[in-house]
Length: 278
Image (cartoon, rainbow, N blue to C red):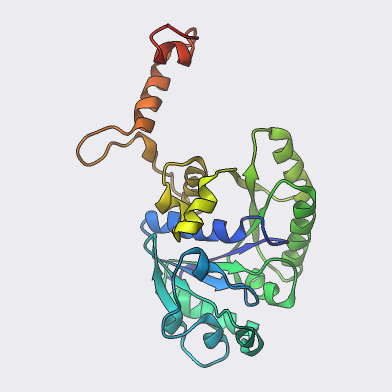
């Protein structure tokens, strides 16, 4: 049985595409899958910087130039998944043949349960290759109008090259449902999940770790975890209810237990303060 390939795409940069690819890789690895993340942004490869890892014996650009085998460019990342790191020099971009990704993906299907391709932002000839070969194309956007407009163009491009668009991942979502509904209407693709605005996201990237490793119980981490498991057809663990190995209950778990026990007629604030407030 060969592995499954996901392409994570967006119509423009700065919408959380790479963050989504990294954390989906971490979530699927947590679900006991062998996972490799391919940094296929040939002009602006940045997964290595986000995860603070260095290339191995070769880079993806070396592989696409026919100078190395696919597995020569694989290194281990925090989160128990592997990464094919891209080159960062302008010369690397010039010698890489985008069409070589098809052979790379075929090789990786034989070695891994899941291959996640972090595509380049925007619309270009390079981005059409992963859109056409992936089993699942995941579109990433923020709720802003310009981002959604470009994401709709990515959907159209994927359709033209025979790509199978699974749906939309909406990042940096606030508290309003109206933005989510408008986004789904603008892109005309199924909504796979929403990722809330979370200050731990830039902190995790500064630390060189996926959010699921850096702050596994944060709201955005939980959202990425749920999305990753659901894409695999599994139910995610409710990790914030779990105690640690010594039997201690985390603050999140304790809060959840209290919330579950609150009678409908009594406010949570009143319950937590013994009736002194709320």
